[in-house]
Each structure stands twice: as structure tokens, then as C-alpha cells.
Image (cartoon, rainbow, N blue to C red):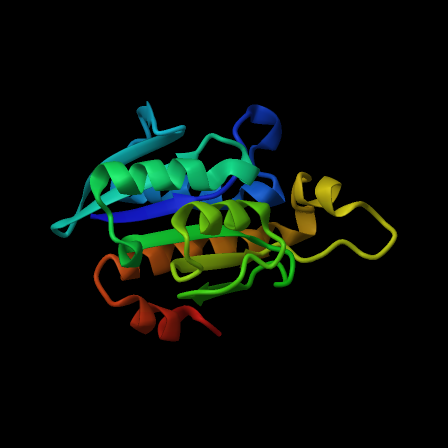
Length: 187
């Protein structure tokens, strides 16, 4: 079974914010794979299904970003999912809007959702997709306010492009080794 996790915060006020772009990718995959997110357990909202014979579990942790690892660990333990069958999707301030980066390991880089995931998994070696949200201009807005804000209208096309690329890379991973998917989707 492969586990695809999108990081974000629960609640209407956080929908479609920069910090919730991981949730947006899971919603896109839910629609594309016809895997409704109807089950609530493991401190998350999830759904399971099949894609070309591969069992797939889509997860949106509902613990708030800083505790995301609790939900991920609980699902992995219950379903006995190996670390190489995990893919985590999240926002990244250090990438421009529209860019994505796939990696097999790495430090949290200041991202609290990834810090929690690393702490609960006991390793930094797991597949991930980082989606660029850019940084605020110095002196304009605090980073917390920025990441909890929505994308500007002029960023809409780039945001949609990065969502599509992220979902496409997840679909590719269901059929190919992650290293091969990295080579295809990293630019």
C-alpha cells in the first residue's frame, strides 16, 4: 500500500491558503483517483482505493500542521506501511510559486509539519514533494500571516500548474520508482 499525505490545517478559514497546498493536492488526487476522503480516524481524514492494482491511501492530517506526524505515524503503524511507500506533500517558502521539488530525504528546513513528521517517524529519509509558495517581501508581512494567507490573483495560474504537476507526479509514483519520478518532474 502506498500512502500519500498532504499537509495543511483543518477548518474553513485555512482552505486554499499557501500553507494548505498539500491538502489541495490530496483533494485533486481524491477526485482523479475516485478515492473519496470519507473516513475519519488516526487524527485525520482519509480514503483508500486502488489504482492499476496498487492499493492507495490518501491522508489529510487534522491535527494542525505542527502535529502532522502523529496522524502519519498512526496510519503507517495500523496499515504496516513501509517508509519507502510514504509520500508527503507540503508548502515551501524557499521555492518560487509554480515550482515543485521532489526529494527522497532532507531536513525539515523550518517547516513545523515536517519537523513533526521527522520526530514521529524517527528519520528524515522519506519521499516528499515541496511546492513553492515563495517568501513575503522583507518588511511587508510576517511569515505566519503570509503562509496562512491566500495566493494573489496574479499567482493563480502558477499555483494551478504546481498543483497539477504535484498530482501528476503522485500518479507517476504509483507506477514507477520514486527516483525515476524525481528525474521526470524536477526541473
